[in-house]
Length: 519
Image 1 (cartoon, rainbow, N blue to C red):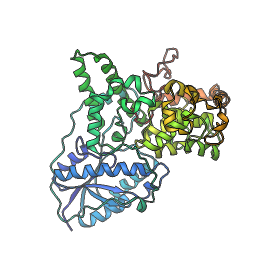
Image 2 (cartoon, helix red, strand yellow; image 1 turned 45 degrees about the vertical axis):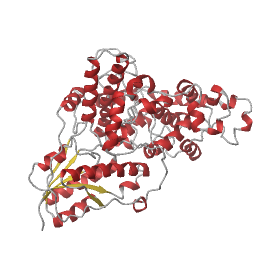
Image 3 (tube, rainbow, N blue to C red; image 1 turned 120 degrees about the vertical axis):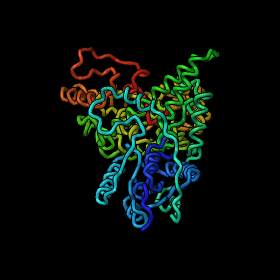
Image 4 (cartoon, rainbow, N blue to C red; image 1 turned 180 degrees about the vertical axis):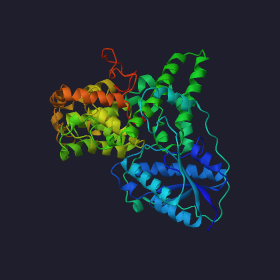
């Protein structure tokens, strides 16, 4: 039997800086085994994809180099985590298991329960450290924002020196075929790894971010002006605390400056800092109510939409072939890049839920596969929010033509991603059925709209609001608001003596379009 070890299980925290689990494990006096496990069953889930895998591999390459510089390289294994731990313990007794808390999907939640059971059976202490603003075992949302601020203000954790463990096989990552993943191309995907995270953060804070507030809503400008940190926050190549402190430092610097354009920069940084709060706010919802991934938050909506999707409509939406040009451009762009700005993400799920009248689960899984930054704790609450099934959010039925005219007025974005419409003049590209010569395109190189968007929206609105008017709906909605609602939202809390008022989207993303960590 070999030397006893402390195992640090890396999951969605692929860095050595500000890594509490790694630091605390190193202080126990035993050699540290930094471990990453590829779990084949996980990669067969309907929300997993090759683009997630490719980004992960790049993150692990950086992580392995960083750990090697500390003294002990990353150990990679493939299999069930409990099996991997059992095999490791046969040669090196595990004195302790360390990891960060994770708000993942239902599969990872069940997996963690199995790991906890294995640890109990073996007498191994498993310590999970907090790394985001999410609070495990939260009983009340009161004071949540202040607790977030306090945690993010704590000093970041410096990486430790690690003693090398001789004779242990470092292992290697499996291939796509070994995991049964289809190699679906994502040619313009962001690159993973700590080095890319830091350069992305730096460029946003000091060059790209000035127009953040004005540009975040339109896909024409958002790709450059948004932070683009979302996949790095998802995979943990940079911590939320590092990001928040960097944004605060930039705000302090701006406050002391007098250069032209300072006010615009200050507004951008305030908005960005606020969205870091909302990132964790939505994750907290899934942490507190895991059924959000699979069930309507407000049960009165059960059965509202067909449980089995209309395959023709779903396939058209997934392929960017709905005949609604701006919707199709956004979907095709997302497929090629792995990213989309928040308003367009909201529009995509809203169109599927209202205009196409699809239950949110299948569209939600499709978007999860496409988003390189897929974060279950943000994704599923937002999918339900944009589908109108939470019971506490304003029903937002986007007009896909108006969105195109507002966000892509000259049609540049649509013509790039829907080249079939390149010859349609001006703003008619958003309504090609009104263009001269439409008969040469529609039904030939580009489809007719699968629905009349105006009548479909009207019908959906009537169905949804009919449910919201019932007395049973209101009582359940109050309970949901008490448990999950922002304390800054305009929805009255039970027992409050104030009238309901509509709040601006900029002040309350409970009513806004935050989606993923996409800012």
